[in-house]
Image (cartoon, rainbow, N blue to C red; front, side, top):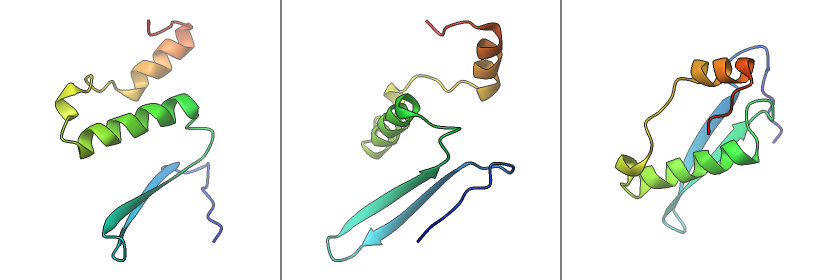
Amino acid sequence: RHTRLDIRQAPMLRIGYAHDEVNNRWLGMLLFHHLVDDATSLRILRSEIEAHMLGQQASLPPSVPYRNYVAQAMLGVSRE
């Protein structure tokens, strides 16, 4: 099935999940537009989801408002 994201309207990321009763497991699916996600951010998102699933969310760095990243980008400043 083809699903489209309207880039004129938020959100541009969807998360779906379903229980696979045959294999007794949960499956998740991320749907996002390439304008809002790339390999680096997807790797970070996956590691953060994994930390939550393993009960290790306390080990994650504090969240930073997206507006901070936008301000950094506008100034051309690196996080490091």
